[in-house]
Amino acid sequence: MPLSSPDAISQHVDTVAIPVAGLRHKLLSYLEETDLMGGQRLPSERQMMVRFSTTRVTLRDALLQLEAEGCIYRENRRGWFVSPSRLRYDLLACLPFREMVESQQRKAQTDLLTAAEVPADTVIARRLGIEEGCAVYRITRIRRIDDRRVLHVCHHLRRDCFPGILEFDLAVHSLTDLYRNEYAIRVTRVSFELASTVLGNEAAEALNAAQGSPAQRVTRINFDQNGRAVDCDDEHWRHDAIELTLSAAPQR
Image (cartoon, rainbow, N blue to C red):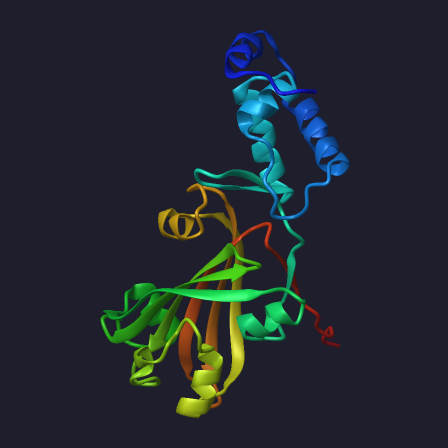
């Protein structure tokens, strides 16, 4: 169907009512029939209102449903996009981000946002087994897969374990490699907490997403060869970007 002019749109959409479920089905059929690939932009909302003879409210509800299902995603001031295939995130493998991504024939990139010494709050102190107010290093980074921002991660490191680590280029170096090569610290045990959540203001802004968008939270505490908790990470992923996997033998 050819797209109409803005004037025709405004005259048309007010007179049409279509159930959200029906529009969702039409949008799914459209995604299957077109040649749009993962990461490609959908038509504008104004264009889709005309194409599917619907209202802005109904269209937005249907798009939000598809976003929650992981079929599409939204970027602020850019529009809606088809979700690429998910990255398989094997929790037990404990691979550095770049290695995990490149092993699946994808391109990895890291952007450093902040790196500073801060006092540990109650939560961080409990995780790391230190007193509240003790100095820790707080490092925040964005992770990209195939140039798409998919992960906002906030690391908290014990300062006594990693003196001077902020002097390294943390957009380039793997923390795991720095731990092993510069500080003789090996991560031998990891504790995970997983939860479905939404993006808060800091993570949403960093990922160019709408605040409140669906997200997957992965909180990780890393323990060294001596049993010390040496750092903890709070990862907030775009929920359509990863598939969490875990394989373990049952205890008998």
